[in-house]
Structures are given as C-alpha cells and as structure tokens.
Image (tube, rainbow, N blue to C red; front, side, top):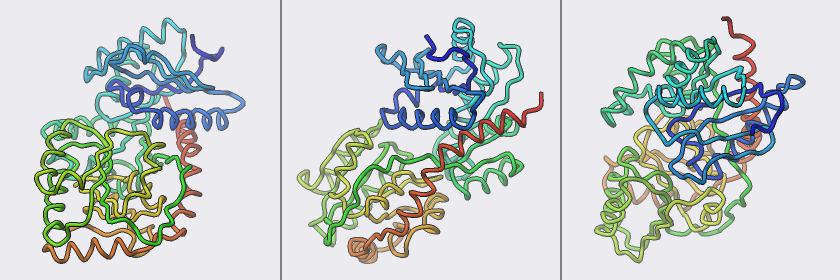
Amino acid sequence: MYPLKDRNLVLLLDPRGVILNGGTDVIERHFLYSQSLKKISMPNYLSFLVLSASNESEMNTYSKGGLLISNISKPTFNSFVFAIKAFRYLKLQKIHPRLLIAGDPWESYWSAYILNKLLGLALPIQVQVHGDISDLNWRKLSYKNRVRFFLAKKSLRNADSIRCVSRMQKFSLSKVFALKGNCISVIPVPILTNFSVSSLLRRPRTIGFIGRIHEDRGIWNFVKLVKNLNKLDTAFKLLIAGDGPARDKFIHQLEKVIPKNRIKYLGQISQGKLQSFWKSIGVLVSMAPVESYGRVLRESLLAGVPVWATASSGVVDLLDSAEPGTVKVLDLEKNESDLHKDFESLLRVKVGPKFRDKFMKENNSYSDKLAKSWIDTIENFKK
C-alpha cells in the first residue's frame, strides 16, 4: 500500500531496473530526492514513486518517508509491456501522477509516452540524460548506441524538460540534437561524501580501476597501459573494484601482463565499503572513451587521490575545477617512458582541500535543484 493518503506524486519509470538493482547507494540517492521534493512542493506536498524492475523476487518494494520504489516487472527493453504494467499499477492504487520522469531517452521515455496515452492524459515528461550520447565516440561503441541515438532525437525534442549532468554535455546536446538551451537543466548526480580524506604523506604505488567492467569502458586500453608501465616499473599494484560482462576475460588478460599477487580484485562493492579502500589507491585510472560527468573521478579527488583519465567531456569539465596537477589526461600514444613519468608525477602530487570544499557546497544543492526542476516542469507545462 502506498504510504501517503493523497497519492499525488512525481513518477519515475525505470523499465531496465537500474534503480532497484543499483544497490543501497542508488536507493539512498533517490530518498534524498524525495526529501527535497517534499520540502520544495510544500504546502502541496508531492511524494515520489519509482516503478522499477528486478529479477529478484524478494525485491518487491522499498518505502521510506515520501519515497516508494516498487518492482512491477522483470528488467525489460519492451517499453509497451512496461507501460501496460505501470498503467495497471496506477489504476489499482488510484495514484495520480503530476509528472513523468524518464530515466533515459529510449526505453524509459517511450514507456512514459505510452503510459500517457493509456492514461488518456497529457502529463509533462522530463528526460534524464546521464551519458554523453551526443559524442560521436559514444555512437561508435556499438550498434545499439547508434539505434539509441536516433531514438533520442525524437524523445529529446518531444520532452518538456531535460536534465543533464555537466555544462559540456548541455552544450553538446543543444548542438547535436538542435535543442533549446532553456529546456535543459545541468544537475549532476549528488555524491555521498561521508568518508575521510586520505592524508598519507607517501601514496601507495597502486593503480585503482573502479566501475563497470565492460568493453565500452576502455578496459583493453587499461590492460595495454599496465603492460607498458610494467616494462619500466615492476613494483606497482592494481586494485580493481566493479563487475560486468567482461570481468573474467579482463582479469585473465591482466594476469597475463603482471603476476596475480600484484592484482587485488574486490568485486562489486557499495560506495560505503569502497571508502575504506581509497587509502590503498595511489592513482585512479579511467580509460572510458566517453564520460559525461565522472562521478568516481570526483569521489577520487574528494578522497585525496589524483586522477589519470582519457580525454572526454567529463574529464575536460573536471580539469576546469580541479587543482593543477591533480588530474592528468592519459594519452596512450605516449611512449612507455613518458607514461611512467606521468604516473610518477601523480603519485607525488598532493590533492588539497580547495576542490573538496567547493564541491561539497555545490553537491549539497543538487537534490534540491533536481526537485525544483520537477516542480518547474509541472508549473510551466502547457496542455
């Protein structure tokens, strides 16, 4: 049963189950959104409902304060099927959405579009864009991305508002998809920052790789980097945290390059557990060819660990705000000697408090900004 009496709410559709399967960190972040929505929508209190998906039968619902996350389906790419299930749920619970939020410009958007038709309403739709989908490199990663790019052309132009996560991403979206800038809000994903800062005088000779282990994250270039560095340095170690479809092959390839005893694989761990490992990392490496924001990169700097990352819009954005020397662009075209010099310079650099202090202030405002964008979308909507 829904926890609130009025049942007027903002509804987020998540047919692929990104939220329910994202772990406690993702769920906690959406609870923060619900608290901001409650505060900003007063006295006409709007609650927050997420209709998500999961293969785990025990993951039925999550209820806390003004947030309800309900599992109504197995993860699906079929927008029509998910919209039907969402429609039945809303009718059964007698829920009246004021705004539909699409967690992506493809499956989620078309679920919202079809749900609007089934309800016989004209509810406003906000589309959230987290990836740098306007980057040509993103389209080149897979055939699926190329299809999604063309789907996004239609959905983004029909959206009543768009939420993206960086200034560079907004500029690129406006240019590539021919969108009006005033319909796009730049609101990064807030980061849970309740962890201590590394204050080690001598940083460990350990390279950290954190995130999804997938071919589109540049994992084979990471193997190449490790191989090149190992020609001049046999003392550094690796700390790998994450999971994904290429995990076994990735770890196997690394073990062919350096001995197993220099690789520590943590598997998929929560952000909370990861905090205790930052002190074990000397440099965080990201080989992702496309990065719109770089949440883990920012977490790294917050923890006092410098970043070495391939060029992307998210990295360029970070370079503008980070302290000099704490972020380096990783160029695999460099020879082994120059790569090793970059690695050594990052091990010696001190990540000061300037970035952290500025980021913490901005980060604390992101939930409120997102909730306000929802209210603004509702109020500015013209049927």
